[in-house]
Length: 113
Image (tube, rainbow, N blue to C red; front, side, top):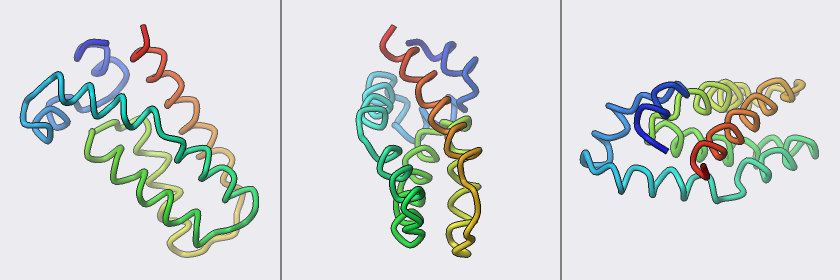
């Protein structure tokens, strides 16, 4: 994966790099760690079980991770879910969740290439 590929993916690499002290190796390592955890799967399970309080906590944590790394394509759907969950809105989250999973998988493919 390169910074150019991340830009093409939609990440704000300048902001992400700045948050990682302009250390490209560290930035990529943090992205790898974000991709290796199972929080998105946990969120999906919580949503399917209508555990909105737990889902809010998980979505809020993911929002922080994706925001700090400036992974905008992942941040957008997770942010939307976070705000709906903050209000404890009982709705169908599948559109947001599926978009987040799709973008995570797309980024994972870039990372592993």
